Length: 80
Image (cartoon, rainbow, N blue to C red):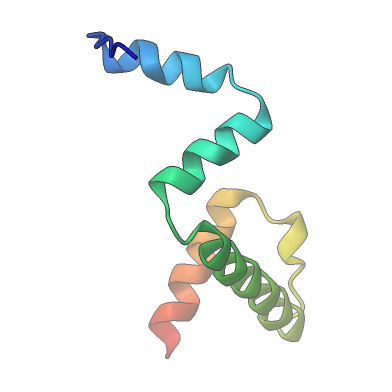
């Protein structure tokens, strides 16, 4: 089998990756992030915990825009 090496600009590779199916994108992420499942489990735990903390304060986490979520997380981190 012959190996062919291509020189491509990174921007073109990124555009090609954007066109992949969700399964193809997932395969690339699993290659780049070896413990992707563990990372996703941690993210899910953090999101569930934030919903609980917000509910205790009378805040609906799901209705907050991303920018407000970031400010709230920053505020909570500095309270401790």
